[in-house]
Amino acid sequence: RLLTCMYCRRSAPHGTPMLLLVMPMMLQLVTQTQTFHPPAVKRFEATRRLLDAHAGLLFVDGNNVRAATGFRYTASEMNACLDAWAERSRLAERTILYWDHGPQEASFQLASGSAVLFSGNDQTADDVIVKSCGFLVGAADLCVVTSDQALRSRCRTQRIEAPPSAATTSLEMLHGIYLSWLLESDEQLVWRGSAELIDRYSSPHRCRTETTSQRAQQAQELFEELARLAAPVAAPLPSGSPTSLSAQLGSWYQGGCDGLGVSRASRRGNPVYSYQHTLAS
Picture (cartoon, rainbow, N blue to C red):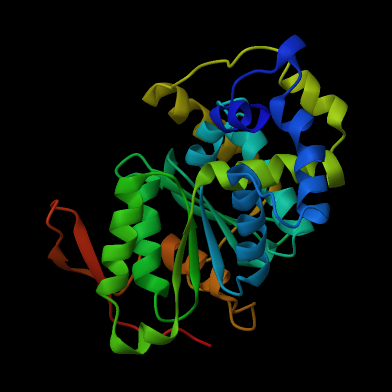
């Protein structure tokens, strides 16, 4: 019953977050139980194994992961949490965080090595993620973190459009709620005290959904914060600068997605892209 409630994201008695109550039991089951594996424990184990084994880039749909936590994190808080988690997990230089809105299309490089991309107001983060798949499919293994079925389908369609050389790379999908479990458990057990999380979960959900204007305002605040604290990505990259794939992606996006063209429309009318240039190794 506890695992079922956690899966449904319901509040626990007395305001204690269900995840914090269940996590010790989950970890004990993972380490001690050989025959009994509840579905939530299996998903938790599988998520950890997938990310531990993943050697490519991690594309994170920021607002989708926020939704999985009941919008208890603002965009700024979630960006900071995901960045800290990625750094602790040694994934920072391979993690790209995508956000809807922002005053313009822009890319920032965080001190940890994570990249942050804003869609601006003429497209969505989903569109930017699909364009990123078009840019990088065939150059690296990709894992897209989202529970948005339309976005997952668009990324798979983009993968089909890849050249034959892309057959040596993979495209994985991970539900946003599974990453949120991992994020919050690592917060409690590794880098953030449980008291702060209990305080955060002591009140009901702020909202079940958000309006477009609310998301736009939070993106604006996050954009202004990163403009003060992070480094905007140059386009093109200066000579002698790091040539990691995440840095190349950020510079390419900042420069207007040069070389990316629409090859056809999907059955749902979404653009499917082709990329004409060769990435640096």
